[in-house]
Image (cartoon, rainbow, N blue to C red; front, side):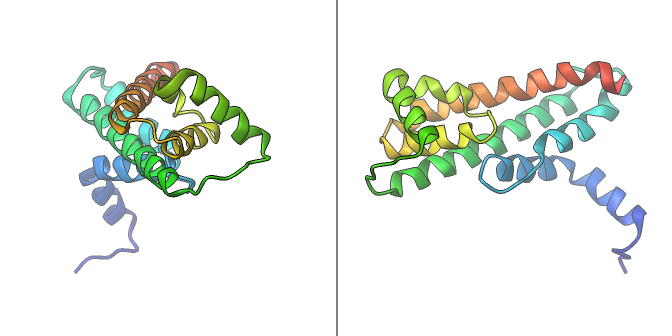
Length: 159
């Protein structure tokens, strides 16, 4: 029988299922819900970095799962944006995002990793009916680079 209230149960559970934790945390972080994917990412990467395996398969899978989860979360926001009716927004942040996306197109989704405004970019891209495949490509590149940068910028703090 499992003792779900013991520390060892949860330590073993997250050790076994850490990549799925990363995926779901990254997915939730890309939506309006809080997911704290950066904390989970660094927590899961730190033991690998400490043993000196920066380019190991575990780190590559961790970056892949974080990028995939975060990208699919942003793609969900994109599809929700497609459902929005045409509105006349008076919100300065929304108007700014609409103008930038109209001007630059899907390439603005390279910045979809930014807190708050990144979610607005994804929703507005869907609302403007930008091509989903180009949006997916730029979201994936931006979010992948974000986790790679997070890995390298966290090195001095975990080693």
